[in-house]
Every structure is written in C-alpha cells, then in structure tokens.
Image 1 (cartoon, helix red, strand yellow):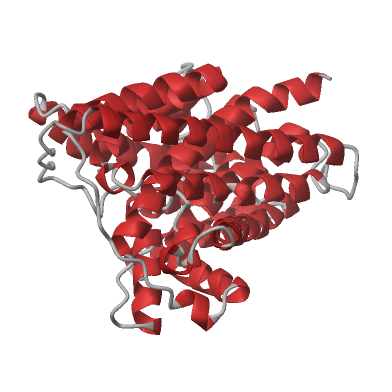
Image 2 (cartoon, rainbow over the protein chains, first blue to last red):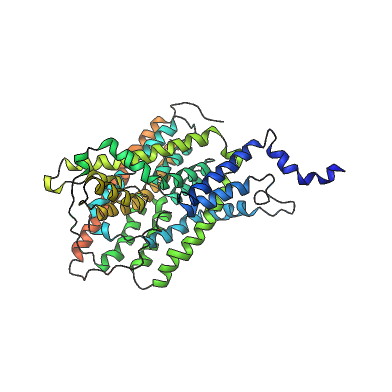
Length: 387
Length: 61
C-alpha cells in the first residue's frame, strides 16, 4: 500500500541517500549564485538563470534533462544540444548584440590602447600553464585558461569546441569573476604599482574619428584576425558584424534589436542552457574547486600583465607622456566594469585625475584581444596536441 | 577523478604562451597600424556623430 505512494517521497529520499548529497550541494550552489545575482547584483543577467538552472537540473530524475520514455529530450539538454553543442550558436549570436553595444570611438582616437588589449590577455596563458600541471588533458587546461578572457561567450565556445567536461565550472568561474572585477583589480593593481605611478595624469585630447573609419574598422579587424587565426572568424566576425550594424547608421532598428531583444533573448536562454553542464555528477568534484581558484589566478594575472606592459612602455616615453599603469589593467574584456574601476582608483589617488576615456579605450581593446586570444588558442592547441 | 600533478604538458603550455602572446600582439599591432592609416586617410572627413544608444552598462555579458 505504501509503495503506491512512494512517488511522493522517492525524490526526497534520494536527496538524503548516499548518491544524493551531490544534488543537495548543487542546490546550495544554485542558491549562492541566485543570492549573488539578486542581492549583491553580481552579473544578475547570467548568474540568476545559471543558479536557477543548477537547481532545475539537479532535482532527482528532473524532466528538464535526459530523455523521457517517449524519446523526447529534456528542454535544458535540448537547448544545450541545439544552442551550443551543434554549432555554438548561442554564444556566437550573443556576440552580435555585444558588438552592437560597443563604441570603439575612444579606441579609434587613441589606437595605442590596442596594445593593452593584447597585454591583458596574459592571465589566459599563465593559467593554462598552471592548469596543465594539474589536468592531464591539455585541451581542458587551455579551456580553463580562457576564463582569463573575461568573456563568457568565448570561454563557453572554447570549452565546447575542446569538448571539455568542465564547461559548467568554466562558465561559472568566468561570469563570477567578471562580476568581482571591482574587488580583484584594485588588489592586483596595488600589488605591482606605487602610489606615485597611480597618480600619473594623462591628458585626454581625442582625435576626431570619421564615420568612414568607424565603418571600415570592424571589416578590417575581422579580416586581419581571421587571416591569422581562422578559427576566430566566427567569434570576431559576429562581434564586428554587430558593431557594423551600429556604426553604419542605416540600420538603426536592427542595431537596437541586436542590443536589446537579441542580446536579452540569448542571455535568458544561455544561462539556463549552461546549467546542462552543471549536473551534480559532473560538477561536484575537486576539479571544479580547482577551476574556480584558477579563475582568480587568471583575472589577477590579466590585470598584472596589462599594468606591467604599461610600465614597460613608460621606460621609452618622455616624462610628460607617461601612461598611468592602471590603464593597462583596463585591457581585460570586462567592459565597462574595468574602465569604471580604473577611473575610481585614479580619482581616489588624485581627485583631478580623470582616466575614464583612456581606460575605456583599453577596455574595448580588451574585447578584441579576448576574442583574438580565443581564436589563437583554438588554432594553436590542436597543433600542439598533435605534435 | 583524473587530476594529479604532472608535467607532461608544460612544454605545450609554454609554447602556447609564447605563440599566443606573440600572435595577439602581432594581430593587435596590425590592427593598430590599419587604424592609424585609416585615420590619416579619412582625416578630411567630417567627424562621426556617435550613436546615442551607447549600451554602456549592457555590454558586459
């Protein structure tokens, strides 16, 4: 008689069984992500759906994952199969929206900031090196390093193409640390700079940028990046396509759609979809904890890389044209958070020192640098693994 | 769980670091040169009016 009502308590019984404790851990992790999103305002657009999805897929025998008796697939797994596994569509389409949101004007009027967008990708490779000491699969190590791209879609894309089983942890780390930039970057910058260096003033005298330059820029970037790293074409291409929608000024409704409806729709689905790789048996393990820690290494050394490069450049610049090293730290892809952090740090040291536009230039350069880095990793790692 | 301290891939990781950083700097350097040339070539054009919808706080995804 009691067995007829077993469906009422089987799920709860499983949670408190020897196999079910990991599901409880995932409930807690999902709760923490939702808390960070809604209470602390840490990347709510991504962390809330991811947190919710983490709980959704870890309810025992969840109908949202796996296959039902009639052969139909759970919605979260289906979204993952169609939106990420089949063609990496979701992160790539999101790039159209991101590209449409970015104003490259501050960068185009001060193009040497592009170099900081390169230098601040250092954390990716250092983290990949450290990860390679721990994870025997080199592609996993490289995918973990891409947390340092500070760019969720790039991290998801690379981990999918490399078939890394740590995609869930990588995505959680990437988005969580992006939200923690206001805490991580000041710490990292103070480690490698002096107060005097942080007080360097940089006058802002922007050169005017023509509409033609703004239109040709995304086209040239796509071609250049694509010729060097063909596997970056989808990443860079869609980012630049979105930017061209914005800059051509002929397709305002499409630009607006990309910035709002498209970006919001993909964001809603992407967060839930990533939860497909947050099932307890995949996520609750030592590897996840190590990856979360390595993500911190990535962001710290991204910042340090950019700052040290700025200090290196200062060796060759006259006194009145020195670069405030903090601007180098803005070369990570966490836009616009990083630029605001640098501005705030500069004003704290000297309330007349406005570095925002310089930092914005470096920050948007980081958007390009991160996708180029992702493309280079996608190109080079298979060659290294084969040899 | 396949996690253990091992150095089999250190060579690959160092090679990736070298090629990766060199590659990024080369690409960004080429883009920098192109931007400088574009700015010089379009110097006589009228400065662009910026798009009002900046998406400033939305771009971090």
